[in-house]
Image (cartoon, rainbow, N blue to C red; front, side):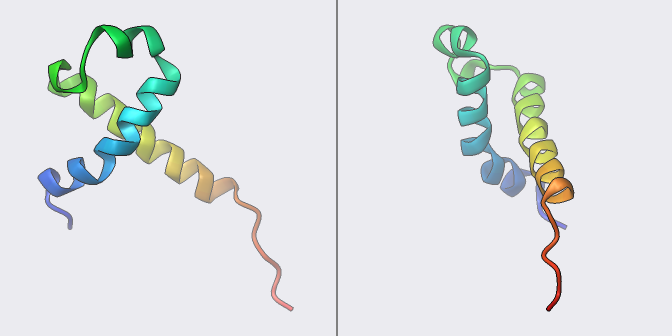
Length: 64
């Protein structure tokens, strides 16, 4: 199991990028460090969900 602090660091950069793409007005008004822990966790969860969806819907390569 990954430590939660390490897990947060893993997803932080991608969560910041997703937040920028999805919420440009909010991104300009509030820095990442100023968000509440609940808001940061929300964006990290969005990244994790996106990864799961990507893996689920990725076409499976047929074995030759």
